[in-house]
Image (cartoon, rainbow, N blue to C red; front, top):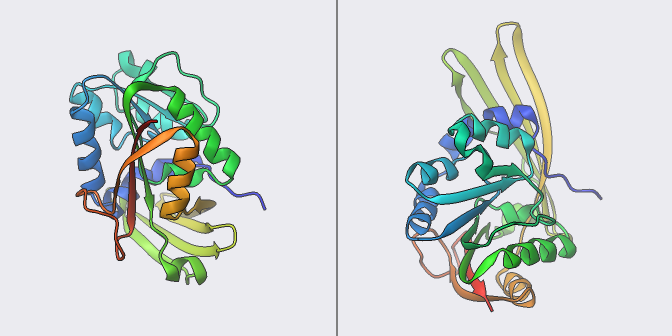
Length: 253
């Protein structure tokens, strides 16, 4: 089966509106603290529409970003000055070659979950490691698999309802179809929004690979990385049962 991880123009258009409501700001705070504590160059893999990137740049960080979605990068560029457009580019994190190295690399908001195969995962980590300075830090965050979500399909739920602009409603419906053998959650998302001509609908399917703690440790170590810390939340607490975040803080081995 071919798994999907692509953000179309419609999804990118509504991305900020949806996740401003659905996503807690605690991860953004964590990453901005890490970025502002770094004196060197920073790379954000999966910079998207700039949820973290824009604030980091405005705070004076020497930050660069890549994303596989041309639609996302287009929106991000609209938020920053033209003189800074060179800092962001469309690139595949599995195959990118950098002309510089970094002191901090972040892969936030489940970016690594779009790496479905072992080859994808190894290529991603190889590229990241090759871009790290000797004492650099790599941070990857993932969700910890919840048993109910990985073994049982969910009913279609409306997880967002709001306005994407004054007087114009937007709704998003999500269905999760798990594949526990392949460790993949397949998500069916349907956007429904108001236009002057009537109600519009758009469906996009995408997939998220999930990982277990020791699986990630093995992947990271076999890719020449040292795992220095593993957190279970963005307050830097230890990963224990009942935590649903996984943060891996790594350096070159």
